[in-house]
Each structure stands twice: as C-alpha cells, then as structure tokens.
Amino acid sequence: MRGDTVFALESIKFDTLNTLHQKKGNDFRKYDILADGLQVETSIEGEYQTYKMRFEEIGFEDVVYSRKPSPITILLFISLLLNAVGLVVLLVRWLSKLGLEGGLISGITAALTVIILGLFNRLFQQQTEKVIEGTRSITFFYGSKEVQEVNDFITNLKVKQKAYIRKKYMRIDHLLPVDQQEDTFYWLYEGDFISRTELEILMEELDNRRIME
Image (cartoon, rainbow, N blue to C red; front, side, top):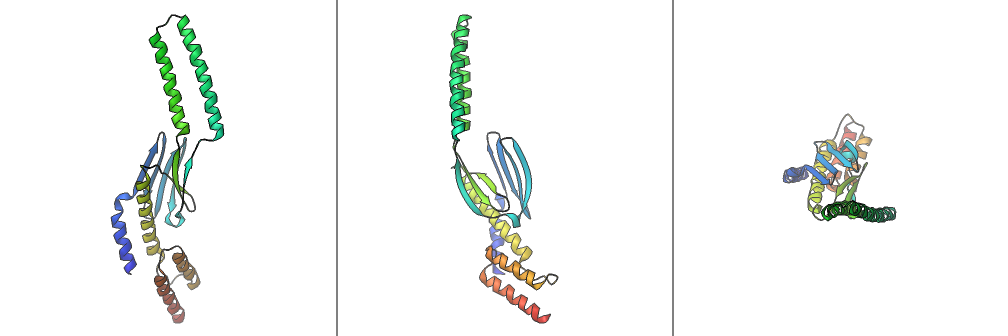
C-alpha cells in the first residue's frame, strides 16, 4: 500500500534519532528504540530501573509540567541555612582565639558558602519534564535546550511504532477468527495506525473470507 511507502521514507529520515541519553547531575535517562519496542534505563535520585516497553504499550498522550520545591523543602533549607550561618560564626570565633590566619578562616567560610549555594541550586532549580502516557509513562527532561531533541525523538518513536504495528497487524491471518481480526482492525483505526480507506479495504477482505468459508 502507498501508506507503507510513506512510513518507510519517514523511518529512513529519523534513523539517526534511535537513542536519547539525558543527564542532569547524578540522574540520567536513556532510551533506545529497538525493532519491537523501547529499551528504558533510568537512574533518578538513586533509584535505578531498566526495562523494555513493547510498541503496543506505548501511548502518546503527553503533558509538560514544571517541578518546584515543596514548602517543606523550603523550610528545611531555611533551617539549614540558619544553622550553617551560626556554625560559621562559631567557627570564625574559635579559629580567631587559636590565632589562626585570616586566610584560613576566609577559605573555610568560602567552602561552606559554596556548599550552601550548590545545595540551593539543587533544591530550587525549576525542572521541566515531558511525560507521554501509555501502559507505563515515559518521562523526559524538557528544559529549553532539550525541547527540540526530545520532540524529534518522540516523532521518530511514533514513526517506528506505526510502521511496526502496521506490518504486524495490518493483514489477514487465516489462522485467527474473523471476529478477532475485525476487532484488531478497528483498534488499528482508532489508534490512527491506519486510515479509514485502509480499514474499509481490510473489512472487505474479511467479508470475502466469510463468504469463502
């Protein structure tokens, strides 16, 4: 069918986008498009996961959201900051009594400041993510520098999924019950894997099979 030729051309166009590897700090997400699905490997906040999703399990209802620090996180940081300031003051006084050079005091103070600022950036940096829903959700880092790459990868994933689903299910199988295949063809149409015209052709072939049987 003409549609198969179009999907083949699209697959060639996106062949270089079969892998997406994202990293933020110690967290990472890695996605590899396989012949029959998506291989997922993630490590988020120390929790490591790896699994495979079949193309049939992947949906494309998407939502973009920004994650902000919770009120509890803010209160904890303020408490930590106050304690750190108090610790610095006590440390400076203690080192001064010991007659240590001001350079050492300044160095220690600067080190603590760097640690606090690093923690601040870690906790309060707004993180935008894009999630596509299916049997399991697939989440991407979606900052301004990642938007184009993520969108291109998702487009490629759709193309590969559609081509695979069409090849696997868009045919008459004489070993399967007619009613079951009829349900499959309606599923293909409702999932936008085939057009209405293609559905009508397939249903006509099924009707011919009924007559022959």
